[in-house]
Image (cartoon, rainbow, N blue to C red; front, side):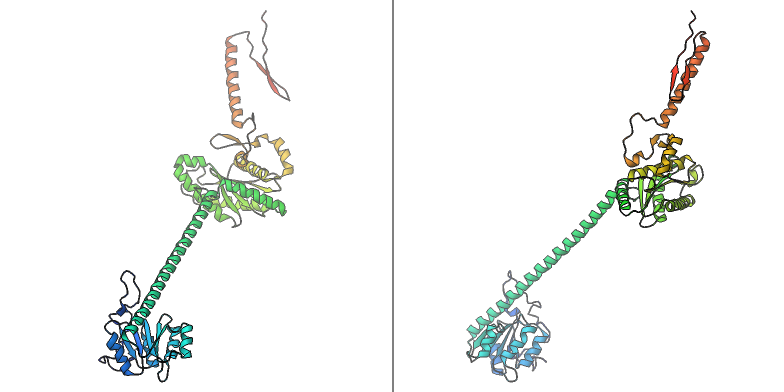
Length: 457
């Protein structure tokens, strides 16, 4: 047994467990409850049994006393459990009291150390006290009252130190908890910011980049291509007869189709390529550092993938499948700036739609565009499937519509109106002899109407 002897010995009460039943395990100090001194055990070390017996007789009613008769035995007991105070005789065989107390500094830094000595001028004691390794010394012979006060002050010192450590530990835990919560809040805020950034540049339906982001990114890509003398290609894609699909299946199924189309287009291109929703049923794909011919090959592959894909409800389309038309253009081949290249791709898309849909058309180069414009003035106009006419790529470039520019639909309406007027005049002329029908005279520069009337007189 570490204390030596049996548990029936009144002088030496060696512990059979780490903490006696009447001593709190944590040795904490609670200000609300005050200090209960018996809860803080004291270890008395002396090689003379009568001195140990005197300690027990004088203090066992007020304190929890345990004893050891040598420094080695005391170290063994300290290794088994915690003590608040250790009181050691100065002169002992084998290991002196000063040596014992100094050896407990590193292993038990919170222990309050007291030494009993008959020599107040001992240099080792004075040095140990000055260096803080010994809290107090008591001279022999000691009186119970004075030693009792010293033991109480020692326990109070230990209890206050334990209380302070508990407060510091609580503060550290609180600080760590606050830091953890702040880090978590920062992570959540960062995720929220990233989510809002994605929402700001994303299309709400398909999850692709939206029109605004495409315009900003496209201009940056054109600037980059110009700076590094690279080729940059663009594909403008339109879902063929999407209005028919929407009218037949309803807008919710139309949304499902657009989302499936976005997924298919994203999987069909490279990671460096940018896929965006252009608006409605139109999509765009930006192909960095890609010549126009290569972009045309890729566009044909994309068109074929879409035509062969088993979209749901594709059988409601006139051809029994869902198809797309694609216009391809490139910088600098088809324009000197970002807007011109978009216009060129949009015109190529119109040609693909006008040529029968489900096909890829490549934009005309800058040098060939003037001649093509003279041959086909109507290429500046695009007729949507709902019958509306618009200027090619006007919505893409946000260009103001020129005032007074005729659309294809207006021209058709005007021709129909003129035909109705001519028919009405012919009927009136037949019923009223002598009245001539206005005749139209055309010339190479312009057309005008000349009304000729016969003078019966």
